[in-house]
Image (cartoon, rainbow over all chains, first blue to last red; front, side):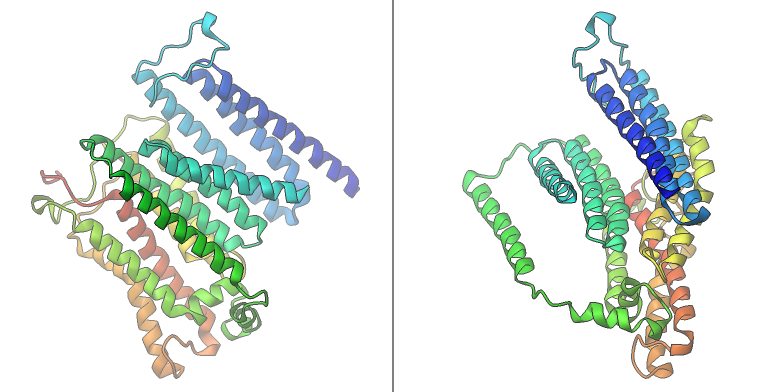
Length: 112
Length: 312
């Protein structure tokens, strides 16, 4: 039984790490602020969620598992809020969405 | 496998430390410093020092990061100082800094390999206080005077920050007023998060008796909640002349000092606790410190009073 839980953990955490990798590539490669933000906030939600789910079978007791879930919820809430705030500043400062032709090029965008 | 992880961690810490001191913009440098703090936090976890890791994440990275961001913001508004120190002076500074770093390294490497006496004493004397966390035993009982002095330093730092207030603003509300934002994500966040934050702060204080945690880490989270509410414009800081605010700030150090002095009568030595009630007394003192440290840390980030107009 324990090997099955370990395997489940390995698969979930592996998927989470893959999600982080994809999000980081998006952060580095996407052309404008809003797209980069999209990549990072997806990571906050999905990849952290997968890692927390993967850690849950490894901790003792329901209390510790619930605390892990709380960590995920807090990260989601702060990630979503900060994402909105950065997007608001980007829009106010008039960061234009990148031209489709410019996608793939590393354009650092305006500084906040 | 884990050795490679540790090597990678050490290299990341060194790289980020270099980036923090080598970049020219104060903002970039602060960002590097905050990430450096998070890497150090993982390093402390790898060393099994969970109390230090918590403190590093909360105080070293979080709170100091907020203070430095505030300072960087102010410096960017200030007229740039074009005078660079002369080359010999810079060389001298580099040599002096390198000397300090090498000296510290030499001292650490020269430490005896035997278990330090303090750790043994703290671990074996857990029954004396009723606390199972050796770190908290050292902080609250065996080296209580150090902890009191630490709180006094925080207090002195706040006095220092307040003394920067211009005469016209003295006694007024500190920092700038954040306008109440229109209903938005930040307002919602600042309404929903504080109850959770207060709960986590109390939890850290409570479990700190027997497990990693404690008043200081809890206080930092509480301070973050205060700052969040203020940032969202939901509440303003009270005027620095407010008696209630000042009482709140001295409550913790005063309670700790009072209990410490009462130890002379009740237990025969300063900062000794009557054994039967040690845990209860320590928890009461820690709770008083939680409130005071949280208020002091938040006020340090808020800054001195500088509004010329009285707030309506």
